[in-house]
Image 1 (cartoon, helix red, strand yellow):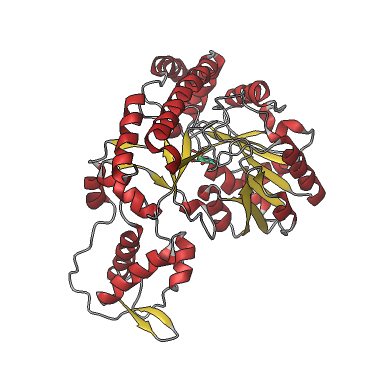
Image 2 (cartoon, rainbow, N blue to C red; image 1 turned 180 degrees about the vertical axis):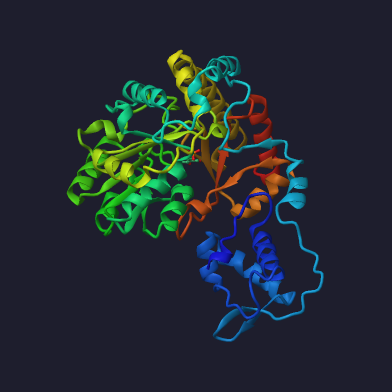
Length: 461
Ligand SMILES: Cc1ncc(COP(=O)(O)O)c(C=O)c1O
């Protein structure tokens, strides 16, 4: 049911957001009287929340007369006169006031603001503003100079042999996955995804009508046995730093999955979103680099290693798919800004990119260390830390009888934002609550202050 694709965020309890969203839809007559609502179970599945959460939301709507329950038939929108109903403001006023009390935000989707190479970037912007190319739409496949620089970078840092011709630039990973799905769905009807995994990718596959086959992620990454038992010939994975568990797919498993893709005449979509940041070893080569003619579509982004607001991502397409891409999207303009693309190309050409990555690796390593040591010091055995060897976030699993939602609320009451993971799971999620803590845009002092507040909030001795 399209109307009930409610966007949930973390700044208030989920049952309240569901209740308010449905109430608003009813008051605005977007849900007409007598419309049948999804069952408690269906809605919980759609929104990736627990049944208890949807139950509490429905009970509130029932109590206030917005919906009715009919025996053996389910829930329906109630009929009533709508006269000048006060409409609650869902996102703006209510939640912004809560946001302002936040002292430490362990958000993962950001980068270190203070370490941003503003001077070098500005120099490149100035230079590029004199370049006639930025006064035009730009190449459909993306700025050629940028594609050349990316090809060089992929060879040097990810072991991938490719050329500018095989690289397609886009304005986000999801946008590239949308285009890719459009091509792939002509031949394939289902796709296997990691469970837990990136919900943003899943949403794209869902929107494109793919049947989604969740495959469990274990200590060695994606469970190959399960993959082999599905009817999918496509799989979307994050092999270098599994999102969100942080597992790196070992070489034996990498070889198996490459073989699988060949035998199926299928494809692996390799999302290499933050492979630059490994703290104990060097970045490991990409899956695409292991085999010539590998059936791999490689995707990466500048959002993690550089800046999320730049909206620049790219993919490397195998020749067969590249031909189809040209046929299907010949009349589509490039969606990423040509100024940003050319500026990034200059930034890479001048060597700023390599030094930025080196600097950020050292900076984030210090921050990761500070976060892990503070957590160990404050929580000892009461906490398990997942994925501290790489990336810009960790997961923590707490020995607690409180739910994920409750722990987030308790932290928020003391001014700390931590993030859920249950929406990343399809079906059951772990019994012990698992939370995501990013650190990239926090100072070491803020990280330590945040952990102390968490200890107080969760009162673990
Ligand atoms: C696994 C994964 N891939 C890609 C992205 C986003 O990339 P982009 O900013 O290019 O859309 C995210 C964002 O968090 C992610 O978790």
